[in-house]
Image (cartoon, rainbow, N blue to C red; front, side):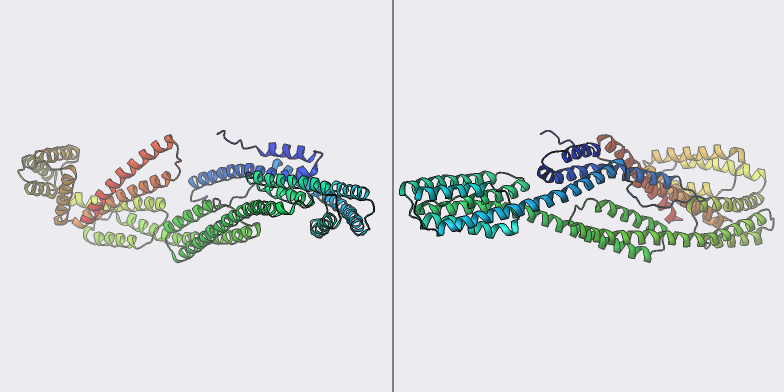
Length: 576
């Protein structure tokens, strides 16, 4: 089947202009609904293009937002252009012409009504006068019939009573006048054929799926039927039955069409009402939440509802406008409330930032102190206060934490170096670690391996220039031992980390080491978590093309890998 071409709005406007310049305005009136439908279809494409461009710009603005220039969501508004203004102009011309056409039609229908009324009066006089010359009377009757048919349409509200009286007078003429049997049979036979032809037309009409044509022709055929005179009594019942069966079938098809439209409109309203109910729930959840991540999640869900709204179809314009205004009000309230929540949060974060900067200043003041015991307690207190100082924007929070941690590390590193002993001791540590590496590599069981690893971590510092070499030798020994004992990488990593923690707990500054390790592990987890969230957000932008599916599979694989790494670090964090 050839794909239907969607006309542009400019092409629709050109067709509309040509249609308005046509000579038969009655044809124009019938075709305007098709013009409007074609324009609406073209307009939806332009609307979608503008909306997608707007959404893309919003995403770019959001991605490029900074703390100094934060992102503020805007609402999409369609921008009319020359084509839309031209269509409205053509519709105005059409409506003006339509008013003039209806006015002229009403005048013409009034004239036709008077003309047909005059024919009825003549017909009434003809049926009531005494029959003296049958030929002359019958010719007069046929002349009146032709005159009646030649007169155009009258107002529908006044037509039925006029048509009923005309039909009654025709029947009265044929049945009350003593017509010559041969002429009567000829007329009855002719009428029988014409009435049968109307029934055949109705049967063909049933095959037509155009509701506009069904409504037009059913009225036309009914009018033609009423204007045909009587036929043989013995044929009348069967003709009448067949006629009304087909008339009723046509009207049933018309009713079924409008029933489907009403059902579709009802379904559209139900979908819209469900979206409104869900949007109200999101608004209530927003009011109850204090979590910025939750605000963002709820906002994305509301945007998804806005996208779904466009897929719900149409009902009556008044009802659609009512529901849309309600949904738009809820959406506006949601985003206004979200903005207020972020403004309030930023005010709180300003206080949190001042607290953190004060803790950094104090840490920098203390980091050069040589009063190890007292200053250690002060640093531990500063670290505890930091945990209670509140959260900022993740990037800023991490930046301030790195500065604070650097001051803490400077002090504790100095302290450890002070208490670490002389170079000889570090050389001794290196020697012992080298010996332990051999024991690690030759371990016969996982328990023995764990014991030797813990012993390695329990030893103090080695000379700085040997640290990398010592660590490399340690990693090599552990890897060889794990290979010999057929220990999986994940189990090997767990053994090493567990032994490391056990050694830290026994160390003089074990709390410091453990706290530092916790921070390190937590940073790894946070970074992986952010990566996973970013990957999952990216998944929503892929379409259904083959290329998009391949990219989607790559991203899904990266999500899976990042999740495994996150689970490993999470397990380490629990061990801490």
